[in-house]
Length: 503
Image (cartoon, rainbow, N blue to C red; front, side):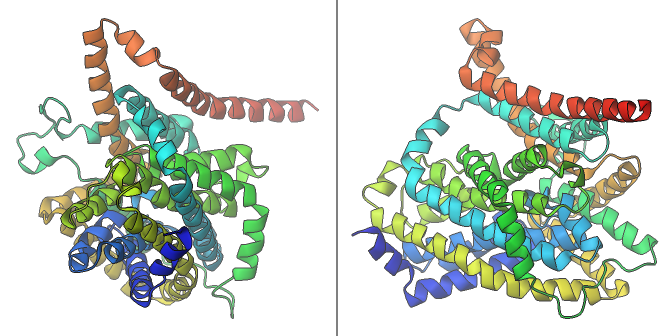
């Protein structure tokens, strides 16, 4: 069977309907703060057990695609990332919404998500076996340096002070050490509490740090939450397309970054969107506008995090190692269906694999009409809902979303406490993004460091283990670049101001 026949199988009425339902369900779940893409896929896995493997995979892939994109709605409209991969979308999406361009930001997010999704699916189709070989070369030390790279990026990208960014990242790392350690099972900072043994739950921390401060500000300020759009606006497709065309190289670069990062198991959309945002800001002629409502910022993050969908399936299918957390859930669903992932996905199970890839293309294309339709009503309803209804509704969803993750009331307490702490810290210029990223990347860094240290000790050279591999040295070079670049840029801006004053 050739590729066209697999595409035709993906286009069968049943599979097409499953793709439409999956994308719509994914968008709606992803848009609710706290209900991540992983959760969207996990909740709907049981629905697929009676289906054929092809149909089950197409539906799960469509849910995943929709949920990653859906996270941008909450990020743009209420400054709360619906999913962790939408953290960087808040940087420019929310400022755009505040000045009355929320409908344009949602349109841009939809177009960028489609471009990123198509590029990721194309990479899965063409590069899977080749790229899996590179991913195999990543050991514990490389993961440690990759996590450090992610942390230096977010700290360097923090609006305002780089130092405050590093303080936030340090706080996040400290939070990630609560509970039982990743290696060795030591109990740390639990203070005798049974609830803290499991650590600080990432999604509840994310909701707390992003959502609670917004709710406090909504209650504290009498003015309207967002500017209502001008009459007759809702889907600004023409404007969105012209901005996408202007930022085509930014979108292309972000899609490549998103795919490349997702191939590294466990890295996921949050690192991909931050790396691409930092690159977009570094290369832009309007770099000073980033963080104040720059459309290129939304294009970069949304293209990258949707490219991780296709990219993440590469190690999942070829190596049986999930590239992102939702891939782990989909991998579980495949095992229930009686499928073994690995090289045989591209030899004995060819029809299932390629029909699924065809379905991923279709789901990504469907995201445009479904996303624009839902986005139009999401923006209008969020803008026109009175605060007296909006605040309790968001508060209710955050509490339910936080509780539902582990059915643990203590997670709600953690969410509220971290929210209040986040609100106080934001008053002093420490933003939530470095804290959340420290929490997400902390365990990856710790595991990589401890394993790398043990390997180095056993081989007689700890220094050689951390600084002796070409891959490690390449990532260390990127870490140094991400730390030194903001310092250099600040120094250049100061010296140019001094020169201007001298004249």
